[in-house]
Length: 504
Image (tube, rainbow, N blue to C red; front, side, top):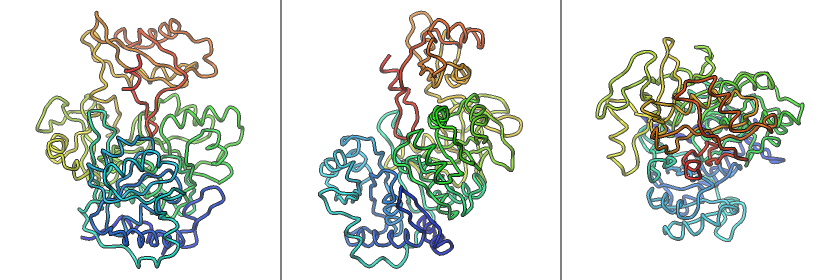
């Protein structure tokens, strides 16, 4: 069977040629024009020797050059290696070497780290939006576009997404053509129910799996419009949602918190058809407040880079349970397995806490060049996620925490996610992260790192500890509270708990 992720853009150029695919400020690009520009970019890449199976790294923000370059690489049968835009040269060089990348396409504003990384790795470099190296965007203006896209087998590599590296060096998760096409199709049709007339705010970074699949690939699959926001700013995002007619918002929890804060100073509201959350668990208090302020329910989902990424979602066909991440999407099953049993999958029953395991068309082919790591997570046809969760009697999955984030206080298991959920209900708290700190008596102690809300100016540690002690078990509530101005965030908007632990 042959299938190419490039068909997503090619088909919409045929079906919706005059619809706007991408909007950035005053720049408005139709599907017809975007596909032609993409094929011009592909010609330049082909002239540089890029062909089927070659790996090309992309170091770009959320600008139209991202989809042009992304689908140009795919149309040649080559493999996209997205690079996080906040990485430094040493980290970029590691990924270029590990993936045996042949060429790097980088935006001029990111060349300070991209150029030395390419040089050190011995990788060719093309730039867009400026720069002293050869300009892909300028070269593309003077070439004849490639005719179409190359055929690929369903199991051929399409995208290599590097994991965050919380357990060591980042690993390259190999996503196949079928993985990516199916995930985009199922997300567009069954999960978000996207239509050609929909307008999506493209504020999730496209180098990350969530934005790449749910906003760009799924949006283009449906023929919808992607309104780009290169860097998320809550006030700017709210303004753009209103002025550009955005009716689909996709974000991580920190973005929802930011929008609620911006809404205090801006009375305008977009007419939202869908609000989608992923990347981390969203406190129920935020879901309720968002419905109050924006008149829209947030539908939560769950997935990982290794699952293309969408695995489960609150879907209209099954209904919605606030606080859960829904049921498996079409063709995907999520279950709970014994977390400490190695080498085989031992499934647990309803309501039991265990490791979330996933199987289906979305599960990756393995970690690039790392068969040992692959064998540890692909077991008996299931992918072991490393997350702890439960499944209720209706098949809805709830995430409890990461296996490695578990706090053991005096022999009792404490799940940070559960504590965060309670603390997020305090009106004086805008954001909170719960982490372990060493303790001579209990082994580990529960520490809450808190960003105050405007209503929480007078909130102090003693008051919050007393409040929390009345709302959760004696072994769970935090005995230590630290107040900060902001929580450290990764490029995808996730809170970096390892950075918090290091700073305490």
